[in-house]
Image (tube, helix red, strand yellow):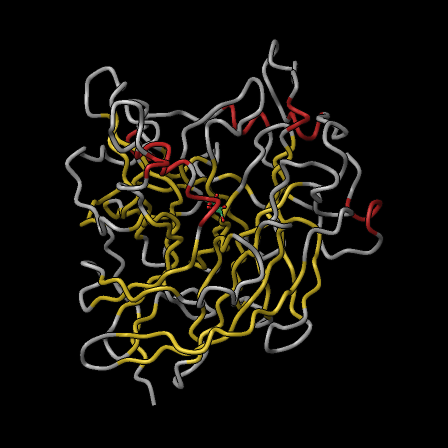
Amino acid sequence: MTSNTEKFGKTPHQSSLWTRADALKVRADDPTTTQPLVSADFPVLSNEVFIWDTMPLRDLDGNVTSVDGWSVIFTLTADRHPDDPEYIDENGNYDITRDWNDRHGRAKMYYWFSRTGKDWKLGGRVMAEGVSPTAREWAGTPILLNDQGEVDLYYTAVTPGATIVKVRGRVVTTEHGVSMVGFEKVKPLFEADGKMYQTEAQNSFWGFRDPWPFRDPKDGKLYMLFEGNVAGERGSHKVGEAEIGDVPPGYENVGNSRFQTACVGIAVARDADGDDWEMLPPLLTAVGVNDQTERPHFVFQDGKYYLFTISHTFTYADGVTGPDGVYGFVADSLFGPYVPLNGSGLVLGNPSSQPFQTYSHYVMPNGLVTSFIDSVPTDATGTQIRIGGTEAPTVGMKIKGQQTFVVAEYDYGYIPPMLDVTLK
Ligand code: FRU
């Protein structure tokens, strides 16, 4: 494999590889890495909107933070259309599956608040219509900056293009609830460069999104993770010995796996405010393994860097597979080398009997994992499903060295604060 140094000149690190050999170790339905079955009689947060990716308000160190005793989450959100003729099928029934599948095209950032870390109340849209420069407001991270209640919302402005942006506002609380004020000026930060991160011109199926800013606990600097694909024209990537890893005889054939080129990107801020960023080579690449490593995020624990990212069955390459869920890698320093948790990378996958029950898992530093319900079978054959668009039960997990263990299950959408900030 060409090293980063050959490709990009002097760089601080070599990307770590999630190899095909690692992925061959993925075992669906291992109880220690499988999400408990979600029952089809789940409650929904709202009959008006679908929600999916959930972004708890947090500080730059990753701690989930409440303000004046109010927990706050941001969600990707889209209206439900039960009465819209466009979503009524030939039998006169609401085609909720199609409505749900179309949601990405009209995703907007909403916020919710709660006194209990669950039973979320809808606050509303974060930005007024017309503030965000593109059609879609895709995932990112809301950061509570200080005790004045200032919030930087980093997110992805998509279609046209995909730009990592941020918008500053303020969280205001009363005895009765929470509101978001400001959020009026969206600042573009950066886009894929075509040298390290694949552009739309190189591949119309490219991914570049999901910013997750953080302060490195060791060097104190401001960085950002994001989802990308490795730069290069679609089909031009090489799946060589390094990407294959140490496979048994008979597993050398890589098929068409050159089309799967996911990576976890990283950028460093040139200023304290995070207005000026420099992209660095990917922290982790999955060329020949998987095409999407979405919503990357860290848990900093025991002096280690636990890197988590969500991925799908359908984005795996030829000859390797695994469940929809969250995957993880660990390193002793920010720039790696990263090794897959549990040998394979799989941390929490859907059970094979309900392969789409949840997605977009977010691992919090207290070991709780939130996700949303996608669809749950309502009959034994799995042909009938119930669409979710709501919060899944939270899972409790223990992280120990290079292993993780499912240990508990909590209520739907349980996202308790790790610290509370009293606003001045
Ligand atoms: C994960 C995801 C994110 C993206 C959003 C789009 O569920 O694919 O990567 O920002 O959903 O709806």
